Image (cartoon, rainbow, N blue to C red; front, side):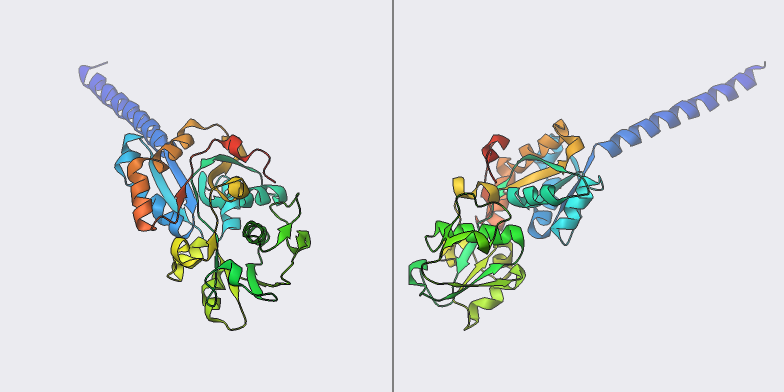
Length: 286
């Protein structure tokens, strides 16, 4: 075989080897990309964190995919269309796993508590709410349960000792002030503050922010981090098959990075209270 032919063969081999190497590198880069599914303000947070110096230090390549509702997002996560999601409380996570036929999720770790608040356009304190008053609560099961727990914590009602993440008005054991409860779409809460037929409104933090409210300043009572609110702490979650994934654990390091927390605190005026707890913190939560 002539020298010229050997050069041709060598050139072809170089191209083939180079192509295989490039394909492997591309595949590796692709597998190192984590798709995070989120909603509203959490999506904004992760878009910021994805571009941060901390993400670069941790060698995290993050793609954010925004959803409009939590159920669809959890299903997409369970089915592997999304690697990790960042939007839900532990109680919402529990409720999904309890009812899901699309696969189960596992918690990766804690992020924050976004306090649910009791607001009133008429009264300055929960003690001022009169007997027979009308109080609105979210009609969604998990949010309704959370609201009733908050009312109990405020001393306005009593609930059963075995009250769970999906329980509702049927588990209210004492209503000494004869409050009337009106179930509403949570997103309408801000507009009801000026409704003469409503005395107090339970509003989630994301909705209150959209209405120009700050739960720490405008609510007459709100959640604090304690044993009663463990189920309301937000988490990162992934499909059960990814349990123990070390790369996904780095997302917690990124979220709790000092610079990340400064950004979140400044942007959301302290209303997303950082929670750094082991998953054992949720032991016994119903």
